Image (cartoon, rainbow, N blue to C red):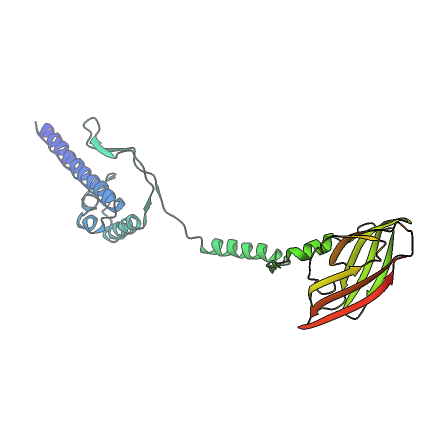
Length: 285
């Protein structure tokens, strides 16, 4: 009976120790969860390590050793390690339960824990390597080419319709040219298109030899009584500066007696605000 009572007391003492250990483990797990969530203030309120101070899991009945300093140091290191831990995210839940009635907690699906190691020197070395690599590329030079855009606006010039007619009238085919008169301002010619002993057909051509415009030009012509003159109207009464054959006038003279053909002519015009008049007699050969 004494032995049974002693065994009963020992079993009860072991159960109490296991319960205390279980409580301590639960406190550590709770503190771990709070630290993981970043709640440091609540985690500091949870006291751990009391079971380790009262309980030795392995007892060889040796002389008790002074482990208070080491326990305190271990406790401090544990808190230090817990505060410096970095937790990786894990979706699995953490559970603690009694296994089979032994009283030992079982932790399953715990999140992975890692503690980063400083790598400042390595980062510096990598950065230096990057700069060295960039230094090898420095011979390339960026060249910027600037283009200057020049917009040329078109210049519109109003050309009188008479001038267009004067230009298009040039270059017509004549079999010969007969000069009539030429001064510093005006040149008069006859462009012969067809000629025979009995007739002469062509154009009277007027050219401006000055920069100023000749205006109000009027040409008069007379032939012998034995001849017949057919004279068409002038293409214009104005000749712009340096315009060759700017005014044209078609004519046709019939000479039935086949005599030498003479004409008497007179021209009137204005230039630089002054009136001018020129007359003469010309032989059309």
